[in-house]
Length: 341
Image (cartoon, rainbow, N blue to C red; front, side, top):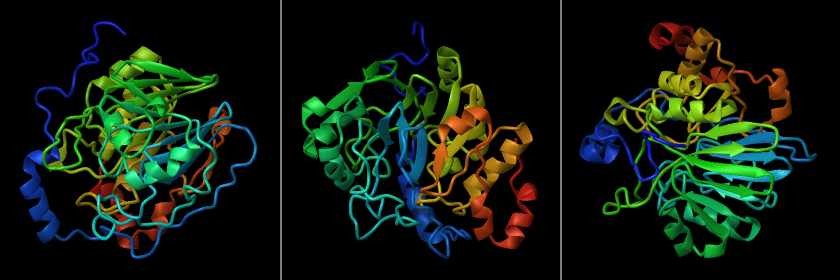
């Protein structure tokens, strides 16, 4: 990659802002503003995955935690297996569903990818629990410092800056730009990097967004890699107050199109209460937009096994499971309320 707008030493574009800049206003809204259906009234449905066989598969475990088997190698993204996305397990956003797989039930992992250091993507308890069954952790610049503090040996950590890559077995992992921010406390803002990732196997290319606002980097990534078989893109936890660092659902779809990807699987939704919208809104808005632009969505329940080989044939089908849990009057009016743009 040459002459990239997003050189490997770059961070965000100059005008981008993050939620920390308006922390007081955000906190006040959380304390005073009521949002209908912000959390489900019951635990969300979960399937128990069958990981037998050796074909390429994908399982959405929670939020941005996705398990993939590619060329017989297991890859796990942003593992958060704790009940809350929080530094404290007695307070903070609590998961809306049971886990389809516990850490103990996971297979041995060839790679764990971590996009950045926020608590809903980097969970200390999960990292420590995964240490013994993970061959390699691949992280953006600076995140390795967290892992070493959590007890992960340095020889099990690969650090990548944007546009750098590493080959592990038949997989090649590329760190690519994202527009976000980092920090786990009040005084460590942007001390570590954030990234999206490209996962290349012998048969397919997959894009994992991590967290990002919408930016021109998606088009650059799509052009550089010549498109993708599947995009895993954040679709959830958005708000006008932090529009530069998290995408609206319609922007998530635009990012998918910029990436020149065929199928889209939305992540970063339906697990934790992290924004001022109904829990089902991200998926329903995305579904409306995808139908408008004829984009094939993959929307499995948590734990459902997605056959990536079937995706290539265009025969993998997953229903809009969240609609069964939406208020009927809301579902009837979604196209009037959430217009695809």
